[in-house]
Image 1 (cartoon, one colour):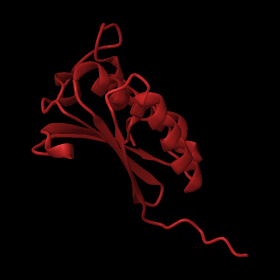
Image 2 (cartoon, rainbow, N blue to C red; image 1 turned 90 degrees about the vertical axis):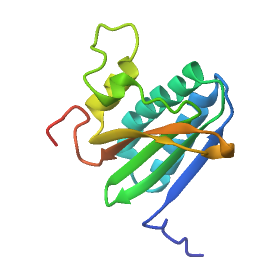
Image 3 (cartoon, helix red, strand yellow; image 1 turned 180 degrees about the vertical axis):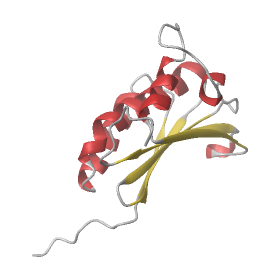
Image 4 (cartoon, rainbow, N blue to C red; image 1 turned 135 degrees about the horizontal axis):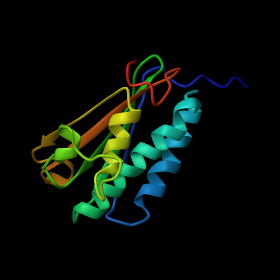
Length: 149
């Protein structure tokens, strides 16, 4: 029996209820997908950043969230987290929180560790609800803290 290799272009979407367990579920699914597609080296940082964004969705909104992960191109993955609040956090769009801040440190981690990141409001998104998507990209072979890459 021959096992076919995974497809080169792939995407996964995970819909999450508003639950304290959502970040853990997102991490487990994300790691399984990255491992399956030979992108294990990105899993640790991807889990951390995804967990931060899903946790923010749980803490700062009163609705469901969604995680979408896709291969952008060879060695590059984009993870987007949608939630029901259309406001992009100030700490994600500008200077934002510093390392000693009480809040916003998760978004600071995204800005420091990701090769690229951003956010945009979404009208009538998942379940017909307004919201936003915050996203980040990771690149294989790039040090997570090498912000010059």
